[in-house]
Length: 295
Image 1 (cartoon, rainbow, N blue to C red):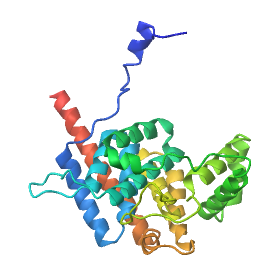
Image 2 (image 1 turned 45 degrees about the horizontal axis):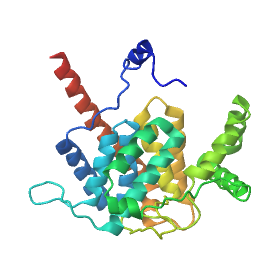
Image 3 (image 1 turned 30 degrees about the vertical axis):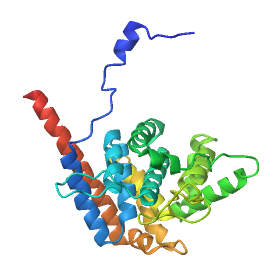
Image 4 (image 1 turned 180 degrees about the horizontal axis):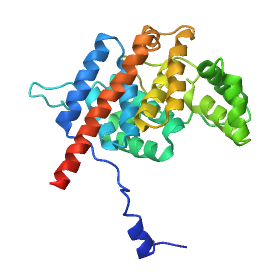
């Protein structure tokens, strides 16, 4: 059994920037979180804000910033401008679950590695009592009894996002590899689509016995897609498709008022602009670091 890397291989793995990017300074993060959250509150779109901010930081590979977002979202500010230590447990559990679910759905768009890093940072940041109140049993294990419903749910979401081109795109991707489209549809059904039951919002509470813990709506799944793909960059066709996906979420029955607004023209533009605001802060901080290195 191989227990150690050869020295030459170990050295190679240190090259080409293998480490995650550090979090921007906390005052900078708090400032952008504050300004974007206040705007979201005015528009009653706080759930959309939490989802897009989580996914933007995750895709930008700033895991420690994801952990700080949890602390920011679950703690009030003290008079001196610092975050207080006390939390309201049911609301903190709900926000942690929403962030955790947003990160999970991101795997569809940016892959497993960055999701692992951000989920690990989020888990480390969680208060112990919050950890104990989050569900530990999988709701997505595929079995012979539920695989048909997973595929049905996935195809329904596919049609909702890509109509009127759903069939054509389905067949096109299937022509690239016979298993490719099957894999996508199953992932859409198991991960990206809302789970059966009710969905949760920013102002809700949650606990260990909550069967709908962290469940994101159809519109918020599209917010995940936009935030990750906008941050990833250079994937214009996919970003356009999932922007249409959010706009088409307006046709989903029994939407919340927040989802109605997010899927409006104004709401969709707001999602993209908020992702860009956060990215501008991350990129400006990185440019400052590079300038200091050159100096």
